[in-house]
Every structure is written in C-alpha cells, then in structure tokens.
Image (tube, rainbow, N blue to C red; front, side, top):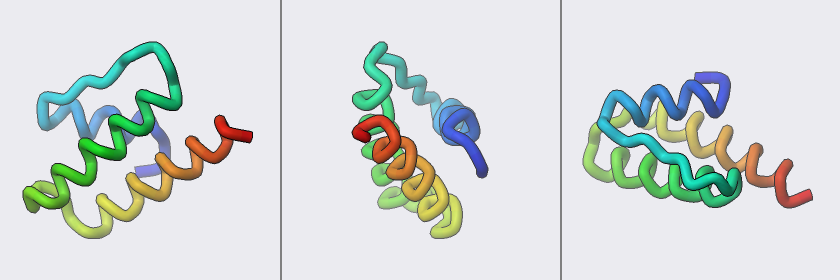
Length: 64
C-alpha cells in the first residue's frame, strides 16, 4: 500500500466507497473506516499501520 488510491481500493473490497467532495473529510472518514476494519480483525497490523500513516501524511499536507 503506497497511495491513498490503494487505501480506497482496500476499502472498496469491504464495500465502502467514500466520497463527500471535501478531501479532508474524505480522509478522516477513511481513517475511521480503517480503524473499524482493524478492530473487527479484518485487516492485518501492517495494513492498518500503513493506511493510517498514509492518511495522516495526506491530512497534514492539506492542513498546511
């Protein structure tokens, strides 16, 4: 997993498509969904960590 697109494809495998139109809100919702999937033991720790890292990096870019 290297990009936000990869995270979107991962979420799509679980039937989740997120598009609000506000990039920051989209990223925050993706983070929440990733956390839910991890807590439900649907994701490995490696996938979870990489997804959260990528999402937070992208959010930091948008906030600056």
